Length: 350
Image 1: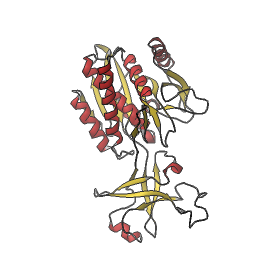
Image 2: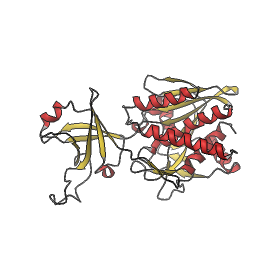
Image 3: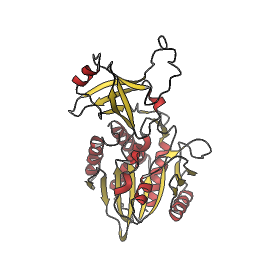
Image 4: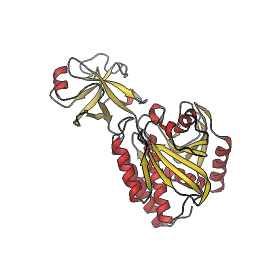
């Protein structure tokens, strides 16, 4: 895809701004209303029709140049998080995981607690042995659900004090994404899985508006809200082909880097459609898109959820390479551009 300098700068500005807007909204699975509203506002400002499903997915309909086939794209805007499990006698909040965060990486993170009445309190996720000057096991105590808790930034001395604030079991605890975009093009943040890909799909819609070019076939772009717990793709629109855009894995014997788009041949649920994967590889090669093909050892996607729900479609999975997934994640703008370019080629926008 050939672009002049101004177009490149405009695309980057929209991509980064959109990504920061999405990352700026707390949205663990089940608590996604605000981030979907932000995404919906962006979609409507771009002039596209959008609707919400009963489960909360945002579906954008893009008419194609031809009829006869239907294509789906999806990314998810729900993230990992925590929920209040119980309140201790001295006023700490015990937690349960929402999705699969790496709990050891949360020790010391600032967070927000959202009550059912709409109040928001701040706090810190801490080990129950938080002081090197006091506890013998401060450095060695496990960082798991039984051994970490949230210290609330309010004057509380016991469980009754916490309950008086309106905090109760089932309240969401959202930790800070700590988003930073460096001058060297790195994007450091929690929840790049999968708000980075969601920002790519919204930027793709921006590109369509800028160029006036539509995809070859009728396309549904869906932002799902239950991927991190396994059923986000179970209610996707019925299509002939589905391309899930999620994070690409980095590490061990995998070949992907933060500067590439990863094409997944197989994950925990089994292989992706051979023809689609082959076509994506061919497109990347022919158009010099920096890519890698990998097997994801511990991974499931919205495409897998769609298949398990009985949707009769071919499906594939791609995404920007993301380092340290479910922890302090990082990718690079080059990886986001490569992902954008490959999706555009798949839709035959070029």
